[in-house]
Amino acid sequence: MTTKIYDPLVSFITERIDTKKIIGSYFPEWWDVGQNVHCPEHDDNLTLSFHIDPSGKAFCHGCGFSFSNIISMVSYMEGLSYYEVRTMLYREVVNGIPDSKVDAFIKTLWMKSKKNKLSYLLDKRGLTQEIIRKYKLGVEPKAGSITIPIYDRYGACRNIRYMNHTKRCKAINEKGFGEVRLFPEANLVLEKKIVLVEGEYDCLVGRCHGLPTVTWTGGCMSWNDELTPLFKGKVVWLCYDTDEAGGRGVKQAYDKLKGVASNILFVQGRDISKGKDMSDWHFSYPEFFDVLSKSIKAYSAPIIEPIKKGKCPTCGQEIK
Image 1 (cartoon, rainbow, N blue to C red):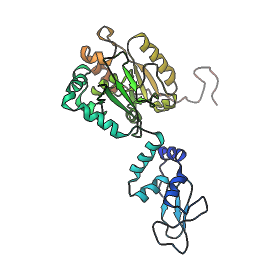
Image 2: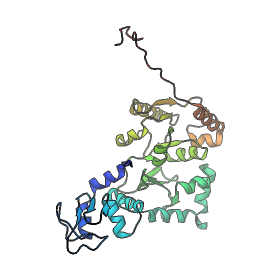
Image 3: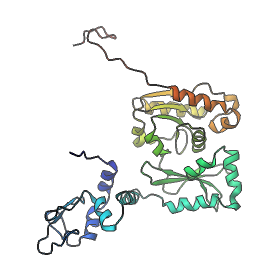
Image 4: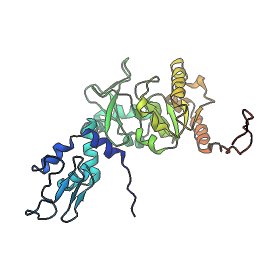
């Protein structure tokens, strides 16, 4: 007996895409539930035996051929892998930014004419080439802004952050894609221990030092309640900037994560005389990263002893 694995992404796509339109494009004779069509797998001209549900699930009563969902159907009809179709339809649903745009910015960053931008990231921001490539940083050629693509957990680019250190506005979003999101979201899903920091550069610096850093896009007071469940059961260290705004951000983060994360800790021992954030400490307080890294690795969740039958240790009443 095989166990079916629930894929939330399939449900997300099916609920939002026009499945009937897709079915009709491949099977023009199909019009709704109850109308059988020609099976694409065998010759059934005499008896139409292929039944298709509006969700895309289908079964042939003649040969047993089937589609499990609309993704399975498109995969078969187009000769593409199931994963390719799932990704394609998901990006269509969320209206993601095409990878071609991200790739163009990446190519610009590594051009010889833009070596000053690469030097800025390496020398002034303390990033490594490995991290720059891994998180697909680039350069917008006209304004010269550093670009940081924001991908969701399913691999769709949901925003591009344009970082400009020469202007008062530190960062702007891709027009029409300014929703507050987590960066890097896919890492957060996989990691059990998280260091929540303030800003994309601090997050990338932390990743350079091997820390499981994550940030919200859009500033210290940014939050998206729809994504809060991604922190469920995780241990979170709060490490915002050591200024007044950062203090407010820490309080908000604690209030939002209380009851969601398994534990929330505050990063202690930061030398504020040597800077206010991770980007500063990379140059002036490098030992900070080693200390925090060891603390995270050594942390183990407290073991909660089950309450034995008897009297409640809090109120003294007998436990039945």
